[in-house]
Image 1 (cartoon, rainbow, N blue to C red):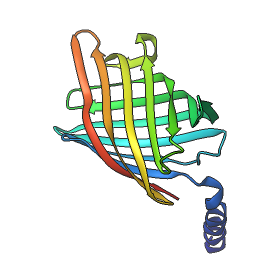
Image 2 (spheres, rainbow, N blue to C red):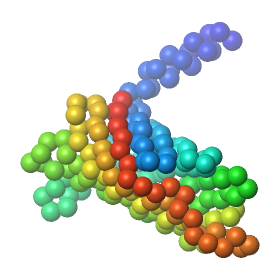
Image 3 (cartoon, one colour):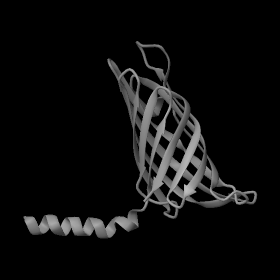
Image 4 (cartoon, rainbow, N blue to C red):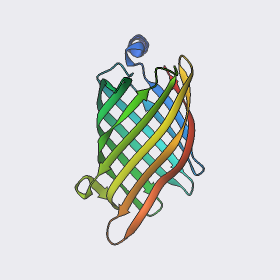
Length: 186
């Protein structure tokens, strides 16, 4: 049994460079979010997972899967992705989630090395929502500056909204606000 554990650990460490990705931590006035993206920008796909704690004991989890590639907007190098984001949330007696369809784009500014802007949008209509969620909208905008080769700082805006299904009617902002954070590439 000991040999198999050592072999598994050696195989995991040897494969780690093939799964180069990033970890980011962001804060709003009311929440903290951690996100891990398992594959790097040069991969044809992106797989990630995140967790958000919102003040008042609201827990939000997400799993992302996107096809991604490099393109250009005008003369600006861009990385774009199209795919799905699964979101689940729990808030005391209410809980729900959705599978949002959408994507993201990161535009690099060549005249200012290290500066980039990212926008992401995912939407789930009623047919892709479950629990107490009737639909869901996730928007994130950020400006980033790469301070060193493997780390950047960013600031932006995050918006996660759901409409509640019957018998709870209404619109709930699960997480919204101006954010700031760091991203570390590994």
